[in-house]
Image (cartoon, rainbow, N blue to C red; front, side, top):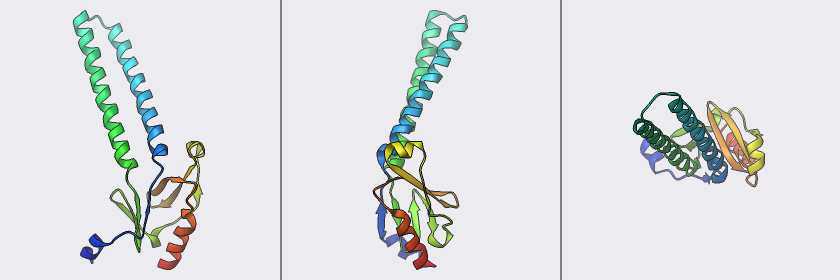
Length: 151
């Protein structure tokens, strides 16, 4: 059966809205990075250091900060490009799976960012969420049908 599942093609592929997934993460990473760097600048200015040492500390912290921000953006882009894969008896996303009979909830929810970006999310239970789904896609009814068919 495991071989059969490896070759199984999804019945439906749902793509999250990339702008909703990326823009808030990038803004948060940049704002936190700026706050971190300002904290470094403040601490360095309070220390008694030579000009060369002060410049080295500032440059090293800036390079470290840029590496962290770029790494965070790369991971966010990778996750935003993942799709929800609907198979005959389960949903799969980024290595996680939930079978239809284990779904506890199909009610859609929206927070402030979802309202701005025209998206919604569904907490299916068992720490599995459908996030950043466009309002134009009515996945709630489709989920109910899959649960009823499986049950």
